[in-house]
Image 1 (cartoon, rainbow, N blue to C red):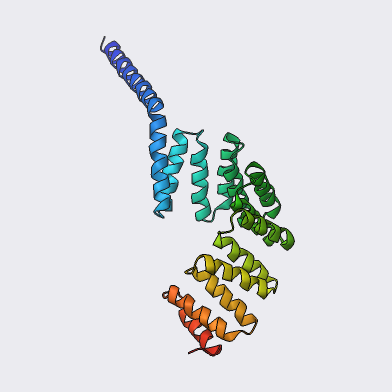
Image 2: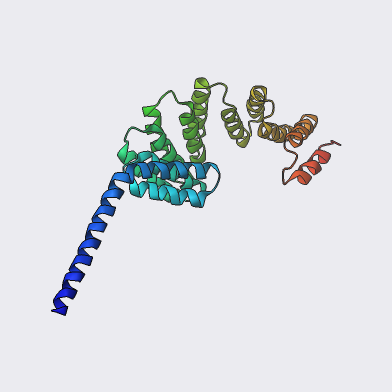
Length: 255
């Protein structure tokens, strides 16, 4: 008789646990969309604040509760890229593309991750797909230009930089990038022209002054190089290599 009572108690308890488990599962199913949204938002905020460990944790949970949210995969790929994990970024972006096959920004981001890995063929393929989907987006041409440049196809890189600037003639970063390409090929006149254009658009663009100074130095225009280095140090007074740059100024005949 006592054994039977124990069996009844065990059955009741087990049944209660099963019911509770079913209720919890049902609650999680109902709450999953809003929970995923909240986790996603917190993950993006943590990324913006530079807390990449927290961002990765929040976005991973967001994906678990909302596995068909392409944007969550895209945002987590950004965290992986910031942590120098391009293979994981590519995996997330591939998932995002499977969910949203015409998402141009995802192709561009995956192309950039492939560049990080040195896979320029796949990078060019993805950037070209992005351009095909959004042919009026200048940054897509600039991104493909970088892939062409790193692969050694300088003429195609210059063509893409040119198209990017045709679409957005006020983008100083593209002038800087094209200037670096010209300088790398020894074409300092064109490099200086691009750096100068960037400075005209953004007079406090410190990187343009620094790179123009280097180009002036190569052309042995020492007074101009000194002036640009001094301007750079005024704009960036706390750079780690300040002592080396001050020594460079003195070597070029500056104070």
